[in-house]
Length: 81
Image (cartoon, rainbow, N blue to C red):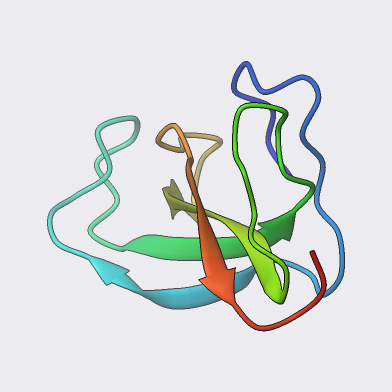
């Protein structure tokens, strides 16, 4: 997983998956396809994950260059906490 300042957060479980396509072109290279990516991560200390939930990071990323948006981490139902 790309590191954008969340030094204590790392991917766990399944590999990141494409959750959809973002509107607009990549601001880094102009590629017309930018994808929405989701990855299960270890919860950072500031996120309280309820029992029976998992921490999921969501961000936009370009397949043609290294550009990616900052991740938003939320707790989603399912999995182990």
